[in-house]
Image (cartoon, rainbow, N blue to C red; front, side):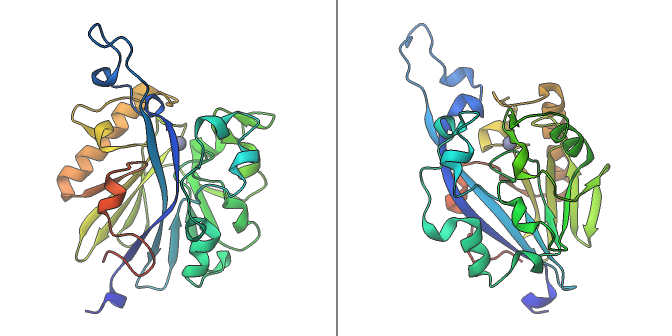
Length: 272
Ligand SMILES: [Zn+2]
């Protein structure tokens, strides 16, 4: 069996933001306390990534669509350029650069799956307008993300996805043999996680913002500042934990500055 007979997974870093950790981790252990009332904020690295998957049956899938080159202006109306600056990124990391490194046009991708429609996950989705690529989101995410008028609601910027033809799933769905989308709501109306069963590596779960960082997973899980529904978020963490325990999976967190350095990343550095 050669690598071409196996599912190949390539993790592509797409730029690192910085932000106050409280957005992602409400951790009493890191807060000010009686002995340290002057505790400074944790201003931490929040790397972003997309995942490119080649299936032996010839299909290509991309998980998420990265951050935008024009984040400074595009994120200014809701103020997220100040809150989540994309200030650590090299030219080769932007999503359009990544596609060139893969020798791909957007339309060469069969499935673009968006874990959710936040501004740091769906920012380049318009590259896939009218390309024939099937764009997939959770049905609740689509409903929520189109439910408001105006420029943005929280970290959803409507122009990122407005006008695109969004296909939806309403239950856990195996979209290709060995590749499954898991409904893990809570962070937003309909956040998805991606389970890939690999021949050599075993199962990998890409949790996106259903698990921001290893500390979010615990146990015990630690909640975040940017959550639509905290009760659902905790339930989703335990759903992922159940799948991970059953399959002995490696979980890839959405924005973990330590983990991304330990993973194989970049074009040519794939998992099988
Ligand atoms: Zn998010």
